[in-house]
Every structure is written in C-alpha cells, then in structure tokens.
Image 1 (tube, rainbow, N blue to C red):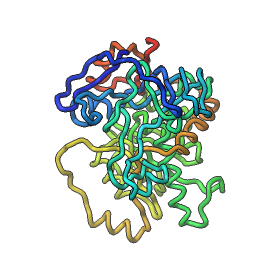
Image 2: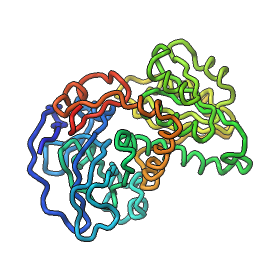
Image 3: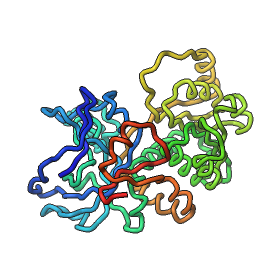
Image 4: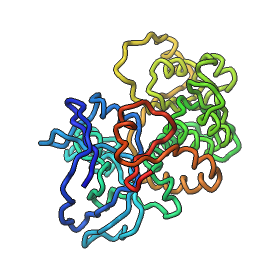
Length: 367
C-alpha cells in the first residue's frame, strides 16, 4: 500500500510501499483512507522539527486529520459497518495504571506523557491507503458530510476548548449560555483552526472578531465576515486598537502559536476573562512581556489562562453534530474552507512548502 512516511531524525520524506494490513482482531476495523488534511504540525514533522516513529522503527507514517470508509470489521464490532464514513481519534492512552486520565479514557489529559498520537508521536498516521484501528477510536460521519468530514478532527479541538470555557465560567453563576448576555471573543489567527474556532464561537452567540496578519479582503476575511464575525488585520491594528474596537474582551481563542501577539492580547483581556492557548510556538528567541501587568490583571480582574490540546470522544461527537449544523447554516462558507484536494503524489509540495490556501487536503481518490 502507498503511504507517505518521514524519517524524523533526518527529515527524509518519501512515498513508501507498506504491506497490506494483517487479519483483524475482534474489535478492530479496516478503513480505506479517503482524505487527509495537511496542517502546520505535518509540515513541522516533514521538516524534522517534530515527530517520533513507533518503537523499533525509523520511519513515521504521517497524517492525523483523516476521513475514511470502513471496509471490514472484526467479529465483535457493533458500532460501525462496512461502507460507513469514519474519522479516527488522534491521541491514544498511555499504559500507566496510575494515570487517572487515561484510565478514565481521557488521554487528552494524560498525566504520564506516555500517550501516543497517530501520525505524530509513537504511532503511524493515516496517509496510507488502508489502516486498521480499534472501534472505540472511530467516529461515524453522516454520508452527507463526505466533502467536509476531513474538518472534524481540527473542529474537535475547538469544541473541546469552548466546552472547557463554559465549564470554567460556571464560576460566574449569573452567566449562562443563551440568556441574552452578549460576550466578546477574539480569535487570534485565521488558519483553519482559528476559523473553525470562530464558527463555534459565533454559533455560541459570541460577538467574534478574528485577528490575523494579511490584507482584507481575502479568503480568510471573507469567511469570517460571511458567518457574522469581524476581521481585523494585525498588520494595521495594534492590540490597544483591537481592544478598543472590540470592547471588554471576555474570551481570547489563540490559534497562531505566535507568542508575541498572544501575550500582547493577554494584557488586554477583560475582567473575568478567559484566555485559551491552542497554538504551539516554534523554537524562536525570547520575547519581552510586561509580566507585572499580566500578573496584576490576572489577580485583580479574576482572569484565567488555560491551554487545550487533543480532544475527547465527546468532542468528536460534538464536531460531527455541529459540522452538519454549520453547513446547513453557512453552506458557502464551509465549502470555502477546503481550498483544494490534491492527489497523494503531490505530497511533497504540500508538506514541504508554505500553506498557500486554507485547508489543503491530500486525497487517495485524486484531486
């Protein structure tokens, strides 16, 4: 079977041939890969900045944003059937019995650090013609979402982050969803993760502003405005100007990995506000921050900062549900998020170059 693999130690990236998947265990499912999204993590792995192959191997099959079709199921599989569309979870639990999170089937909060992530860390990914997975890690997708299903994994990250926001803000007994109290949210970054976060926030009733570098109008600003959000260019608006235009900032959803911008906006977070970090900065030099101002605001304004990574089973289910709702409400906007599907043979151009569009997809069914 054709697969895209990298040697993380050297950055050698190639199209390899892997043997067919072995006979299934009772709870396993054989899946044919259809679409695999390309993101910044994939590009970092392809450039040897990140990634760990499975134990005993030098190569790592990459790709973690996947949509596939079930081909065959084990004898004890009950939840999926041949022909179903599925999205696999990325993170897998550690084997440490002392890790309460993984024992509770929440590896997104793994405490040992020995979790695996398919296509990223200690487990092969999905840029391969077929893969086998355990039924419990597969999430069914309605046939009507065939063209958009590859967005479910990145959308699940936003679903988790916003769900945690509401859990945290239960500390404010007077603040409830759908009670008419308008909240202001700022999304830092207009890549796919940021724009999917924007979708969730707008759907939850936030008055949402997307802040990103670049000139408007462009596809990213058009997307934000088409769903009722505001777009502001970070090239032309200072953090103070952004805060003044937005008003009291209740939530910042950071999706850039740009630490300088993140900490500047943290200084402008409003009273009782929450700042959510989802981006991972590259290995760059240190930045200067007004740490006293940040600390003073956190204490005196009852602010909270947390980070969110990976997603749970419930977050994937929410992503499937909401993707269908979003497409019904904003069909043109959702369709525009996937800017191109490319045959698997073009993997090097997509993985070794800068992102040219919004969500680029490698497809085993061709462009």
